Amino acid sequence: MAQAASIVRVVRTIKVARLRPPALRDLLWWLLVSLNALFGAILFWTLITPLSPVGQWRPSAVRMPSLAERAALFATVDPFNRTTNAAVGSDTAAVTSLALTLYATRAMPGGGGSAILAGSDGVQTVVQVGTEVQPGIKLVAVAFDHVILTHNGAREMLYLDQSGSAPTATAVVAANPVKATGMQQADTAGAPITVQSVRSGIGFGPRAAGGRVVGLEVMPQGDGNVFRNAGFQPGDLVTAVNGQPVRGAGDTALLVGALQPGSTVAITVQRGGRQLPIAIKLGQ
Image (cartoon, rainbow, N blue to C red; front, side, top):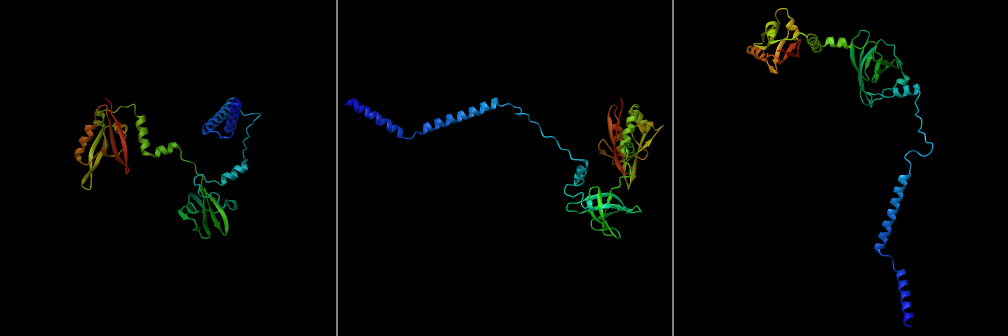
C-alpha cells in the first residue's frame, strides 16, 4: 500500500509541474539561445555570400542626349545667376537688326536688371528694364549674355558684342607699370648695384608742396644706368623708406643710412599719382 501511495504522489507532482507556467529565467535563456542562433545564421550567410553580383549582371548604359537636346538644355540655364531665367522670351524673339551695341548686362532676381547699350553714335548709356533705349524701343528683359527688346510690338534679342579680340598677355604687362618695372629689374639682374654706385649714380633731393616736404625727388646722375637698373623713372618721388614715411628734408639721411652692403632697401615711390613699391638689392 505504501508503494502504491508513493507512485500516486509522484504522478500528481508531474501533473502539477506540467500545469505550472515556465519561470522568467527559463524564458530569458530560450530568448538568448534564439538570438545567438539568428546571429550565427546571419554571420554564416555573410561569409558564404559572394562579393560580386550574382548572375550575368551588367550596368545600365549611359544615355547621352543628342546635340539638339543638349543645346536646348544649356539655353535654359544661366551658370552665372541661377535665380534668373536666362532664356526668358528668347524662344519667341529674333536677333535684332537695330544699330545698337550691348556692352554689359546685370540680371537681378525677379526679372529686373540693367544693361549698358550704345547707339550708332557710340555713346554708352545705362538702361534699366522697362525703360526706353530709343523712341519706340524698350528694354524688357536682361540675361547673362543678351537682352530682350521690344520694337514696334515685336520682341528682339541683342547679344553682347564679341567682335573684338581679347587683349594679349604682352599688352597687359606692358600697360602695367608695376609689372613693367619688375621685368626691367629681371632683365638687368646681371648688373649688380652697390652702395657706391647708388651714391654716385642716383641723386636725392627734398620736394616741398604747400609749405612742407612731401618726399625725396629722384634724379639720375652720370649715364643713368644705375638709376634705371634700380627701377626708377624720371619724375619718381620717394615717399617712404623701409616702411618709414618721408616727412622732412632730414629724411635724406634715413635713405642714406639704409644703404648697406648686402641689404635690400624697400622704397615706395609716387609715380603718376600711384604709390609703387621698389626693392633695391645691394651687392657686397
